[in-house]
Length: 312
Ligand SMILES: Nc1nc2c(ncn2[C@@H]2O[C@H](COP(=O)(O)OP(=O)(O)OP(=O)(O)O)[C@@H](O)[C@H]2O)c(=O)[nH]1
Ligand SMILES: [Mg+2]
Image (cartoon, rainbow, N blue to C red; front, top):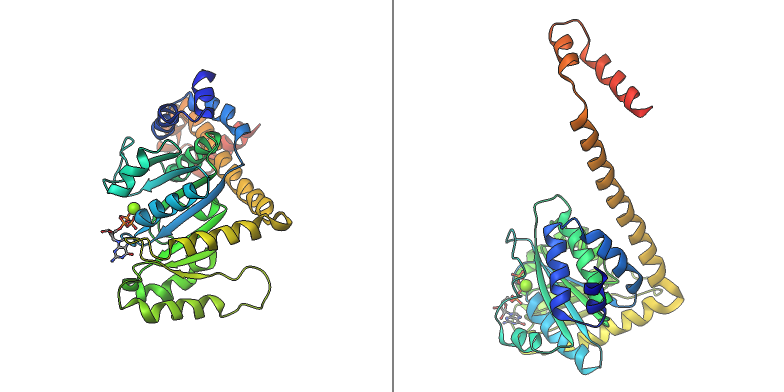
């Protein structure tokens, strides 16, 4: 059983792919494997790239991956696909850059789909990221679409949140303010090759500098044109600067600790609900239902008694 984990640790792409398929499918043996994976996680820098559909996230990630490879760091990429129900490991699209990347054995790219469980995609994405960490990827990038509306709270699973906006999203900027904008560590204004981009960059910068008091991290707004690669080096520099900042004074450690507690609570809740459902299935209620139905017992009293009985 641990053979597959050993192969993942050697960086074997097929074995990592198999593990992620098991994660997606909710395979019963996956938990034991993830336990073997877990001690080998925590060393990668995890970047979440989020933003509206079509903002250019995938294009940008490919460019970023290229920049990281050039600086000598290996890259793992997970695209969380909320639109298709189950992609079964389809790759991130057929763009040329993407194909180049998939041929590079320092890169692992995979999209994961929804298995229908509420919150299931977040769990799967977290598990899949750990597989990539165990592969020894220096940088793990996860792409999620939508701005805060999905059940994938990328903010809770990554070390740095990169928010990608586009000129078309001008009207949405105010909406952004309330949610994800606050969670962003780096903001990208992509498709900056379009003339509409001119004003928005300044507007965004003002928005994030608004209550900046000169201490801590100043969220930068980086203009990129992912399709030509323009600005990607600057973006990479900004993320690296954030990484350095986060690693100073163990800010990263503190952030991860908070995330871990949240994840632990969520996983515990899921397990506990499953246990309760399992117990409920085994209780024979037919007799007591008859009594309540005939008016011989009170529904509320019965429920209270049953809860108390099963608590003890
Ligand atoms: N003009 C222009 N087009 C771009 C730029 N970046 C990406 N695009 C195009 O925008 C379209 C969407 O790009 P994707 O990278 O697939 O966007 P995405 O955010 O990953 O999309 P989803 O995953 O579907 O949410 C593609 O046709 C890209 O070629 C850019 O900087 N300028
Ligand atoms: Mg995409």
